[in-house]
Image (cartoon, rainbow, N blue to C red; front, side):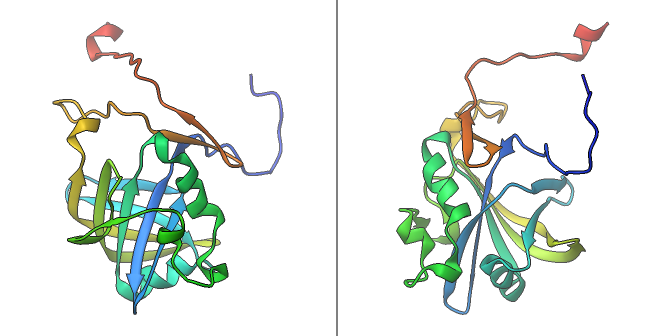
Length: 183
């Protein structure tokens, strides 16, 4: 029951966290993004909101490209690490190495342990309050088929972010509600 009223904005979690990868002028980074979404199927577009003060913001804006990576629940700790460690504070300036995250040799924005990856080209940047929405045209999709069934429905365990550094795993149990079940 909705019994309390207020103005504090919250409740946009639970949800999966996308790991945004970017590289520009010899600097690379990865960051956790809780605010991300598919925007269009045709043409394929994906959006991610990034705070202007984040190191990744400048890398995406400068390069015009970004990667979106989804890692399984077994990687919840490095997922969280990408959100709490800042490239601004790291003397070696390599968050990926510090967290044990590797990229693919032929796709430097694709994380090797991701079950899904999108390579995106920025086609629009939309200011949205304290963040910018980077709208990306999806140029490439890679996935690990062991995480999907023959209909490309996800069957793995995703790390679901609850907020405040807390995660749960999805379960293998699944309920299906076909349209005819509502007759």
